Each structure stands twice: as structure tokens, then as C-alpha cells.
Length: 294
Image (cartoon, rainbow, N blue to C red; front, top):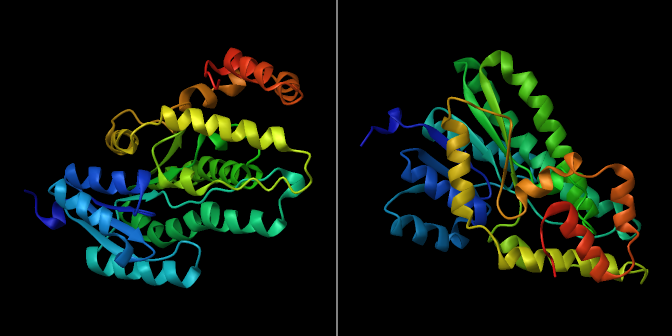
């Protein structure tokens, strides 16, 4: 076993469930010193139980990515304990369902504060020491909803499109310093986020079909959902490969949906939204993406 100082130090935010938990455990199994950030260590029993069962240790630190002071203090503790961060996996995130007409601006801001600004807070905390060393990796977990406008999820889509844009720009910004940026674009994985993401405002009564089709997509996705450890393996490959690339679609629907712009033009996209009958909509969805939602 390598000494602590020889092991790469990898920080995974939102490590208490789903992709974050799987990634922290998987990286620990690959010999990393795995650091998981959670909002409450007391509520991380399942993570700790799974890590023990896997024969690894995931060190936990409390911080809330939505809060400036919490991130600053949390990463100060992490860096004091580890001396450096080699890889940062920005995984912490929240969902957000609503069509634009029914979405309060406050909801856009709340989702953006976690999914975009939370990652910004964390990467700003680790980049100075990465630049000083001339190396490191920033892994940003976006979503296929960062490549296409997932139906009836306007605040979530807005945050993930913004996160994609930030990540693409960040890759150029950090290239001179030998720091890599990786964008992971999951489709549907087994995760608690979907069980919690059940809001369907429909406050105007005009968008019932939109919410119904959104939930049908996720119902189909959950029936075929990818194990989050498969995503964790892609993350590990992405930070260790000798042939790096920027984007990695993964999970059910990931590759199919991420290739949207190669399959459909803007007029066809709008025409799909105008389809009135669910059966015809699902058929068109299948024709374009090869995914059967029926």
C-alpha cells in the first residue's frame, strides 16, 4: 500500500448518495485518498457502511456548496489535512422541474446557486495550489440536460447549460497551467435525486402534457438506469487516461441524447414539441433518439 503522501488526493462533492458516493468509494478502491464532502456527517451512515464493506476509507468533511463561508472553511480544513488536492469532482447538485412560464425567478437562482455557483466556489478553492504545482483535474458532473433542453425542467436545464459553458471555457483557461477539465454528462443513473425530483407545478393548467412526458421519460430511464459505479469508473478513466478528451456522455440515454445536434435541426426540435398526442410524441422521440419511452 502506498503511503498517504504518495496517493492522489481526490475530493468528491455531494458524496452522500448516487454518483458522488459511488465515485468516492471507487476512487478509494483505485488507491486514491478519497475525500467526500457532505452537508452532514451524521447523515452519511450509508456511505460509511458501503465504504467499509468495500474495504476502503472515505474521509468526510462537512460543507455546503451553496454557501461561500462553508466552502471556504471546508476546503481550508481539507487542504490543512491533505496538503493538496489533485482531482476535484464537482458532483453536488439538485434537480428542478418547471416550464419557464411557471418557474419563479427565485427557483432559477436557487438551482443555479447549487449546480453552477457551488462548483465555482469549490474550484476556486483548489485552483491556486493546482496552478502552483502545474497540474490537477477538475471534473464537472453536468448532465445530458446540459446538451439538450429536457422537457419541463427549465431551471435544471438552465443551470446545466451554464455549467457546460463554464466548463468549456475553463478548459481553455486552465490549459496553460497543465490542469485538465473533464465534463461528465450522465443520462439516467440510479440515484436518490430522481425520487426527490417529483415537482410538477402546472399552475396554469396548460402544461399537463409537458410534465407527463417528462415523468414518462424518467420512469423509462429509471427502469433502465445505470449503476452509479459505472459512472464512477468513467470518471476514473477520464482522470487517468493518456488520451484525454473534454466530454464523456455516460449512463442510460447519455450518448443518444448528447448527440442531439447531429440528428435533428431546430425546426424539427420545435415540431416535436408541437406534437399533441403522447403516442405520436413517443414515436417521434424514438425515431430521433432510439429511446423507447412507451
